[in-house]
Length: 101
Image 1 (cartoon, helix red, strand yellow):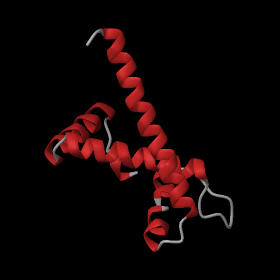
Image 2 (cartoon, helix red, strand yellow):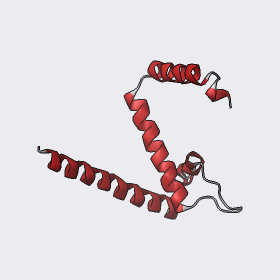
Image 3 (spheres, rainbow, N blue to C red):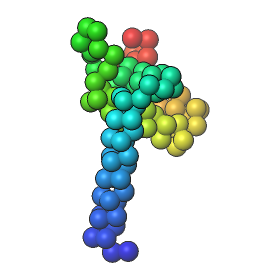
Image 4 (cartoon, rainbow, N blue to C red):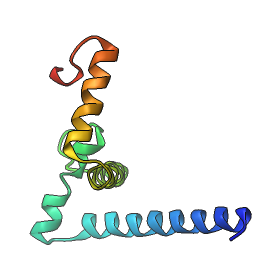
C-alpha cells in the first residue's frame, strides 16, 4: 500500500470509530436500560463538571467514552509491571509522588 493510501485508510478507520462513538453516546443518552444508566458514569472519566441537576451532557459522555477507550487500549498494550515502571520513572523525574495527589 502506498503512503497516500495508508493515510486515507487510517483516516477512514478513525472516522468509523468516531461515528460509532457518537452513535453509542446517543444510544446511551436516550436509553432507559439500567446498564446504560451505569455506563453514563463515563462523565466521571471526562473530568467535566455538570450543572446542578444534570446527570450528563452529550459532550461529557463522548469525552468520557474517549478516555475509557484510551484506558482500555493502554491496558491491552502494557502489562501492570510496565505501567508501574512508567509510573516510577515519572515519579523519579518529577521528584515527588504524582499519584498521592
